[in-house]
Amino acid sequence: SGIAVQIIKNLINSPRPKLFFEHGQYLFFIDNLSLSGYASFPSGHTATAFAIATVSMLILKNKKWNLSFLIAAILVGYSRIYLAQHFLLDVLTGALIGTIAAFPAMYLASNSKGIKNSFNKLRRIDNDMVPSNPGPGIIQTN
Image 1 (cartoon, rainbow, N blue to C red):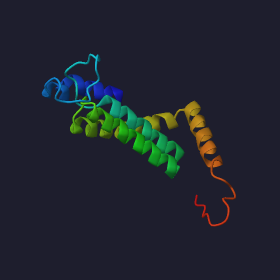
Image 2: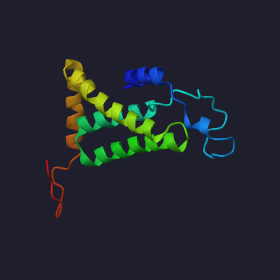
Image 3: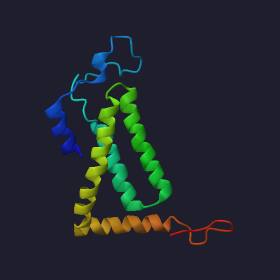
Image 4: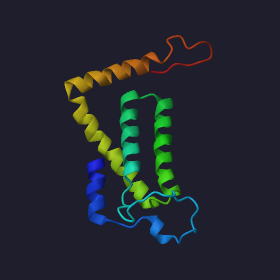
């Protein structure tokens, strides 16, 4: 996702929201942080967050964890808008790039023997987290 984001950023070089606000007009800027006024499109932070979340969801397949990963990635995107570092389109495009980039990354990783063994260990750990005898009134699904 990082390579795709950097290529697009350097081709488009769009302005950041900060350039559209007068000093003191927007309250949530990060003080004393020097950033380029350009290279807003797409959001690299959001792309990375969604790539990590997608890979994590594909590996673990635990619905509770999947929701947590998704919420964390959405919060990263929201923070980029809230801090006036990106527009909504920048964040949505970053999310799309990160999500799409996760699939070929997973394919390449799953075809590497050493990484494939690591994935299998993670899946076993995830399955071990589910109790074998969940107790009365709890329905266990696999």
